[in-house]
Length: 453
Ligand code: F0G
Image 1 (cartoon, protein in one colour):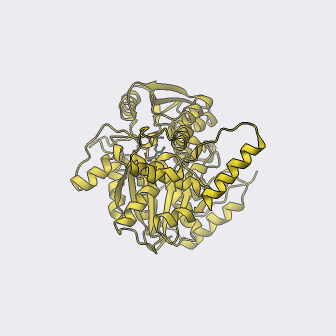
Image 2: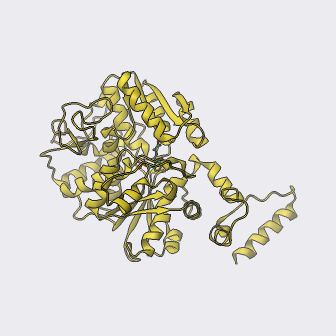
Image 3: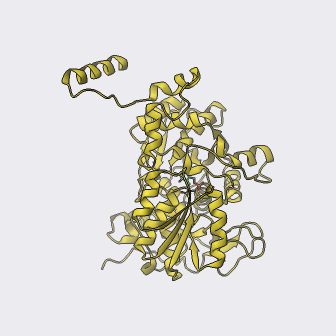
C-alpha cells in the first residue's frame, strides 16, 4: 500500500490546548471544550514549532500527485499544521481541494479591478464544514466515542452525519424546527443521523446540547471543538497556495457562530509566524442585519462585550444570536486589521443573484460576503485596485427554496417599493410557462434577445 508522504518534524508532541482567556493549558479537553478554570473556550497552540517554509510548501505540492487518502484530502495534505491524529482514525471524504474562481461580473458591479471567490461549497457535503469535520470526527473516533452530536442551522449537521457514518459512529442532530433548508435536512436524514427538530432557534439547540454532553458520553462536534477550527484553517492555507503564497489585500467571510472567521484568521497568523507568507491580508466579517450581534459588539461596544439577541434572517445558516466564538473572531479581526459590516435582506438576495449570474452560485449566507464587500468599497476601506477573495461557504443547491422565491418575486412583500424593484428586478429570472409550441418558444427567445440588446 502506498505510504503517505511525511516530513521529518513530528507535530504530535507540540499541539497543546490553551484557554483563550486565562491561558491555562489543560492536558485534555472537557466535554464542552471550555476551560475548567474560567469557562472560556480552548484552542490549540503549537509552542516551539518551526519548519523550513520552502520544504513545507514543496512537500504539500508533491502530495497532490499521491494516491494516498491523506494526501488526496485538501485538509490532511497540510497535516503538519494540524494536531496529530493517527492515520487509522482519520475519516476523510477527500474534502478541501476547492476551486478559486474569478468573478468578473461581480468585480465590475462592486467596482473592483479583480475579485475572486474560494468556493467552499464544493466540498463533499457542499459546505465548508467538511474541512473541520474531518479532523474533529477523526478525534472522536480516536477517543472511542459511540455517539457524536451537534446543534446546527443545517450545514454542520449534514457534514457531521456524513463523517459519523463513514466512521461508524452514531450521531445526534439538534436543529431548529422550521427555518432550516430542505437540502440540508435531507442530507442528515439520508446519512443516517438521529435528527431532532427542537421547537426553538439555533441558540436554544446549543443550550440543550451543552447540557446533554455533561450528562452523556456524547462527543460535541460544534465549532467550539478546537479540532473543527484546526481543520477549517486549511481553507486559508489552500487559498494561499493557490495564490502562489502572494496574499490578497482582503479576505471576506460571513459571520454566524464565528468559528470560520476564527479559523481562517488563525491560519493567516500561523502562516505569517511560520514565514509561509510575508504579510497579512485583512480579514473582514459580514453579518446579516437581523443576526448582527458581533457587528454590534464591535461597533457599539468596542468589542468589550457581546449582547445576545433573537436573530432573524432568511439566510438561515447564519440565523444566530449568541455566537460562541466571538472572542476568537475579535482577536483575528484586530490582528489582521479587518472590518465588520452588516447587510440587509435585500442586499443579500441581490448579491446572491449576482454571484449566480457569474456562473458560480452559492447559498444566501455566503452571499453576504459580496454584499458586505460593496459596502466596504463605498466606505473606502477596500480600494478599487486592491485584491479581494470572498469565502463562499455553501453551495447554491443547499437552499433552492430561497432562490426560486427570489426569481419568482416571492421572497419579499408582494408590493415592492421602487427601490426594491430597481435593485433586484433586473436580476429576477422567473421561469416562463408556455404551451408546447415552437412559435411560443421562438417568441420567448426573441423577446429575451431584444431585452438583452
Ligand atoms: N455560511 C454557511 C453556509 C454556514 O452554514 C454557516 C454556519 C456560516 C456561513 C457561518 O459560519 O458559524 O463559522 O461563523 N453554519 C453553522 C451550522 C452554524 O450549524 O451549519 P460560522
